[in-house]
Amino acid sequence: SLYLHMLKPTDKNNEKEDSNNGLDRTPWLQSLPTQYDTPLHWTESQRTEWLQYDAMVQAVNRQDTAWKQYYQTVSGAFPTLSYDEFCWGCETARSRAFSSSSAGRFDAKIYAFTLLLIAAYVGLGLGSLEQAANGAGVVVSATILKDFVWPKLFDKKKVYVICPVIDMANHNSS
Image (cartoon, rainbow, N blue to C red):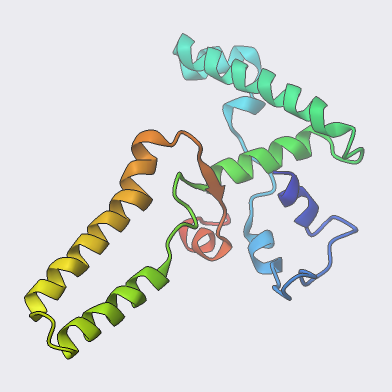
């Protein structure tokens, strides 16, 4: 959420293009909502009346308390960041982020090497195409288990990613 705050077009430090890779994020940033009407912004009486579920009201109150604590933690490093701007960044990030325990682990080199081994195996007459396909099936299955199944079951650490192109297709800016 702090990164989103730093990218906002109203930020005097923001340049049109990202200095690292020359990407113009302006269209995506302009498509983001400028404010949210979530339970976090409601009064206590509105939360109680509109949510009509004590567990939900308590969850919103816990989130409000946690975000105020997070804000206190970072506000010293970002003196121009207001609590409302902090909440905007958090809500923007939470509403647009994809989560995964395996983000960024896909490696196409394994499949290219497998294809090379299949070609050599069959080309040199060491075995049949069916035998090579069985070996490739084992590689694909093991990779899927290692990269997707195992982390979902046993790795509790999640990675959150915001992808502006997908986000622009997934949300209406109005």
